[in-house]
Image (cartoon, rainbow over all chains, first blue to last red):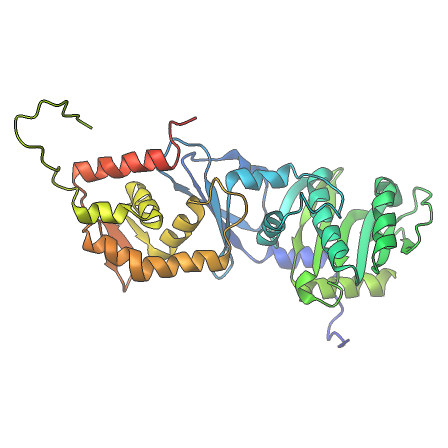
Length: 246
Length: 126
């Protein structure tokens, strides 16, 4: 691996960097102010409203990146799915169909300011699902506190058991975690570990499969952060977590 | 629209604006959605028109419209649909500015486009 000329960014640095990439949501709707868009409370997104000539309340959103290039378009109904994500097991293909994964891809690098645990669990599942499909590589998961991992023990037991994944879990030691074969648990009481919920998957040799979620708990149960499919960024984040905590 | 309930005293004539060219335009979905958007905005960029046509007609479908799908719509608009609509005198294209502008549609054309819009985008249907 090439050495970095600078030290890898911390999780907070990464959020700040992504936050600087402005994106635009052009909301096409007959409703002048579809509430769904506000619910996302997006940090680095400019929202532009354009009217459609119907009385029909639903519409669609076009996402354009910093260079004003088209990134994707989704219906407002579907955007709502992210607020109420179906939470299934990582190996359940039915829910995480291609279209649904594409939805996450389109919204990557969008900095959200107030998603709750359930909403982010949808994103976490999408990353675990990728790791499951690829079946190899390394998955780094920060649970903040090991008590938060309690409900995920069966998921991670199966992930470790049925794939060749190398799995590292991080958290504060507030719960006696049962040993999970194939999962290396790193107890750590560092401030960053306690504040950030993260999942980093290196893609298992396939750069296109690399993905990450980085979310800071800014008030209890409320998160600020982003997810990404940018391999270079995932690699930087991984380097930081590995060198600092592993 | 006014119905002519079988009491024609003169032979029925097609209303002035609705030429064969206009009906020809309406045969294809991307062109219809472009006209629907022009009901709301008189001048729009071709870039935006491509976004709208690609995004709007997929509102009821599942999944996202990706870059390649949208770019295919853009190409089709540019080389096929916009010239057809311009020939039917429904819009003018400013290639230099990359915009299209709706012409002054006769009332019957506007009503017909509105009717198609309501039927196709599901307004007033349950």
